[in-house]
Image 1: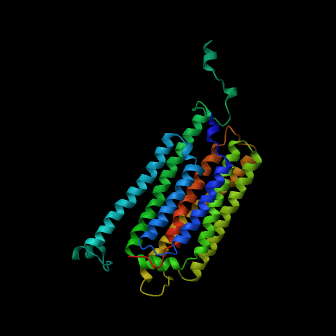
Image 2: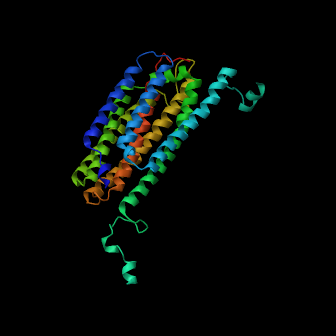
Image 3: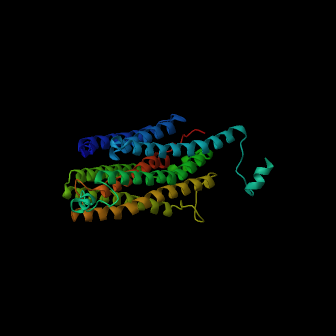
Length: 112
Length: 227
C-alpha cells in the first residue's frame, strides 16, 4: 500500500550527488562573464536544485495530486509577486530614469 | 446488535496516534501532509517578500550589490551550501529509517542532521562576527569606501534580513529535531506512524531550498555584472 512511498537510499544519494555537482557548477559559472546571462544561469541552476529537493527529498513526485497542486500554487504566487513588482520597476527605468529622491518622497514625485 | 454496529472497528484496535476524527492512519497522514504544505506555501510568501525586495534593489543598484557581495567569503558560503545539502540527505535518510521502522537509525540520522545544522550556524556566526568587525552592519557604524556606500548598505541590510530569517528557521528547527530524536529513542515512531518525522523533514528541506537561492544571490554576484 504505502510501500511505493518509500524512496530507496540509493536515489537519495544520487540526488545528493547531483546537488553537489550543481553547487560546483554555480560557483564555476560565476567566474565567467556571460553578461546578463550570469544571473539567468545562477537562477536556472538554483531552480533545478530546488526542483530535485522538492520532487525527491520532499516526496512530491510520489504525493497526491492535491499536494502537487499546492506546491505549484505556492511557486506560481511567488513568480507573480516578483514578475509583477519587476514589470513596474524595470519599465520605469527605461521610460524615464528617476534619480533617487532626496527630499520627501511625495515632493520628488510631484517634480516629475 | 446496535451496540455492535456502534463499536464496529472498536477503539481497542485503533492506533494510539490516530485522532478520533480520522478513519485511518493514511488518511490522517494525508491531511497532516497537506496542512504542512499549506504552512510551507505561506513560508514561500514570507521569504518571497524579501526576494522581491532583493530583486528590485539589485536591479536599481547592480554595481553596489556586486561590490557588497565581493566582501563576502564565497568559500564559506559554498562550504555551508554543501553542509546544508548534506543535512537534507541525513534528514531524508531519517524519514526513510522511520518508514522502514529502524528506530536506532532514525535517532542516528536525526542527530547527524542536528550536527550539520549546527555546523552551518557556527559558520554563520563566524561570518556575522567578521561583518561586525569590518563595520559592514547597516546602521550608524556602517563604513564602506567609495560612492556606492549608501546602496551597498541596502545590500547588507538585505543580506542580514535574508540570512537572519533563514538562520532563525534553523534555530527553530534544531530543537524540533532533538525532540524527535528523543521521542524516536523512546520508541514513539514506527513504520505505521512517523508523520512528525516526515513533516519536520519537509520543513528542513524547505530551509535548504531557501539557502539554495540565497547562496548565488548573495555570495556570487560577478563584479563584471552588467547594468
